Length: 362
Image 1 (cartoon, one colour):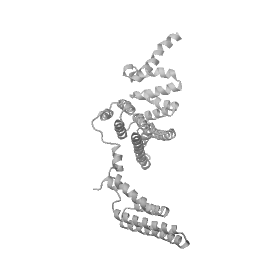
Image 2 (cartoon, rainbow, N blue to C red):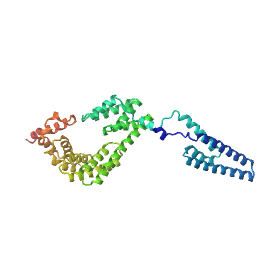
Image 3 (cartoon, rainbow, N blue to C red):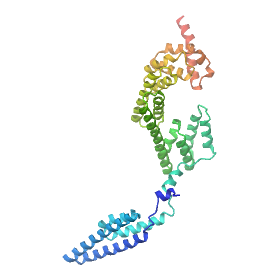
Image 4 (cartoon, rainbow, N blue to C red):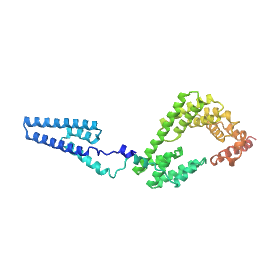
């Protein structure tokens, strides 16, 4: 079985003796041309030129012969392009290059091995335990993992940083973006290279998935599920934090158009309306977000829809409707302890204003 090194880092061993012999002969002939030119006189200079042209022509025929025989052409081609310019120094430098290649290849790492070493298989270590938390279904585990990864990128050793980047690349979440960005700005060149490779890998996977989903939509334009999958993927891609602002805005606009088409096709899909409303808020369109989410308020069992609707009301300055929302859906918003910790004080504050306003009105 052919290994990766045999494909990517194959040494020009085949025909190396021939390369050495031809190089020495070319160097000798080039040296002879130089000696003739140094003698002076028209005939000596003409002879030197003819000899130099003959050497270059012989090298062309020799390289074509190696190509027909399937031998390596890298060093032979180097000799061919350097000899016309450098004369006898071209073959000598080529032979020196061959010798250095043979020397350093004994210690060099093949490109495939180096690339795979950037993303080694992690064992049951703290990084693996964090990943197990992520896939276990706990909603906020990825946020804690993202913070932990960022901490490691700040104070960890180069080996620990490389392990984190490898894990992030395999199981990417938007919360992991700060860890990748920290790797791109790290003082260690190996960490920066690995972070750049991981970033390119993540973007490549996003683009590959995008192409596949877009092909499915083009094949079946009336399939709402395919269009919804594409819109959600573009939404995730724009939210990953790896894109520049212009590219992010462009992809979010594509996701918005996809969500709107999906809602037109399946107006009773509450999940799609929720995703559309959330993206509208992120795009700074609270008015349309409120219009899209308002029909769901009385029937939804998903608190997230109420949260985004409340945010849209706040941005629009519709504070009376925002205060009324807690009474309107007391089954989901009435119990403060059941709300996420970051929102408990917010809804408690809006409810607390009601008796105070009533007293002021009295």
